[in-house]
Image 1 (tube, rainbow, N blue to C red):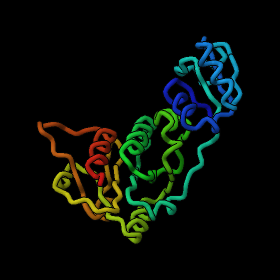
Image 2 (cartoon, rainbow, N blue to C red):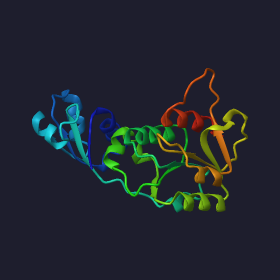
Image 3 (tube, rainbow, N blue to C red):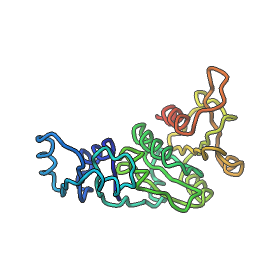
Image 4 (cartoon, helix red, strand yellow):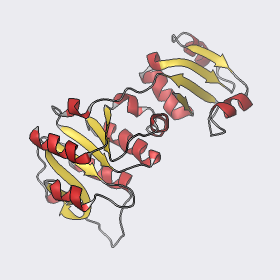
Length: 226
């Protein structure tokens, strides 16, 4: 995978340097930092800025790119002995997914399952998660109903996010829990919601339409920590 821009690459350098195959520099760098990078076990190449632009199709690379190992997807069934799992049902926006993964990792979620999609661009999600994808077990499973059934059979209580649900502050959260977040525009489908144990919401202090899925997910994940 090709990753670019300072934040995700700096995260991978500090936390997963063994995953870097080649680091490409298209800018001047402090000599001490350059010397440190040269000793880290991966190849470092200086390249012209226009070459860097071609590599990332003229996206904003900030003068630093890296070829890294592909992310290895997990089987969601390997998560069934965990305590706190996040399920993304129908989400496709890589910016939202990356931000949610980063937040989930920060807030103690143990694994993330993406449902309702056959594939996702893992390069882009690695970038938008600022590299946190490498620290978060992540699975793809097309059929969300299989996931619901397996989680329930394994002792999880399933919670779905919807504006019409019970205020999360009034809910006694089960020790083994799975939070389901719906798609950006549609939310959770009625069929998915009907199969979940409880629907939860965030009570607003002021009259307001809704929060986006990333912001709402962050609040719910934090309030579901035990």
